[in-house]
Amino acid sequence: AQSVTQLGSHVSVSEGALVLLRCNYSSSVPPYLFWYVQYPNQGLQLLLKYTSAATLVKGINGFEAEFKKSETSFHLTKPSAHMSDAAEYFCAVSAYGGSQGNLIFGKGTKLSVKP
Amino acid sequence: DVKVTQSSRYLVKRTGEKVFLECVQDMDHENMFWYRQDPGLGLRLIYFSYDVKMKEKGDIPEGYSVSREKKERFSLILESASTNQTSMYLCAARGRVGEKLFFGSGTQLSVL
Image (cartoon, rainbow over all chains, first blue to last red; front, top):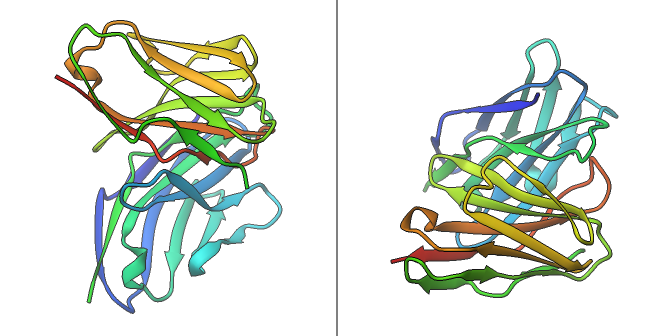
């Protein structure tokens, strides 16, 4: 069975500062890993995904995430926060080769960016 | 990109009413999903469908049912709405396993 833990329900950074959102997963088989972002009053959209091709994954809007099998982590980073990055971020895991590959979502981390 | 459209952005219903939430996708994706989103709980899977007339329970199916008569349309039904079903409901569609989910904008349902 798969599970996802996002550390910190709220993260606040200053504009221009490093963004680090933490995600740890549990999976008995090689996983697919995803980060989604939800802007206010919108559905979720994909930021990036890991599918075993490369451990460092680059996504949209300058975000990237590194898959670390030994730490079972898939933390999301961005070198310099922008005001427009304020949103809620969800990490998700899916079983590689699972029957329907349903995504299991973390509880989300709300990112605030201070001017 | 796939477009997923949910028929209502906001919905207010009374306790005991039968409620239909509609979702339509404009691509030929086999897999469709209904999630419920609550603050601090993230997204929880209610039901999913991997083909027409096929459905599977997710993690929290109690009090809900679904219908998929056509490939592009996936409906969520609250047989008798209760106040604890007040929530944001998100529909999603996906192609093969490992591909990304495309989400609708959500329906904020309030049951009074």
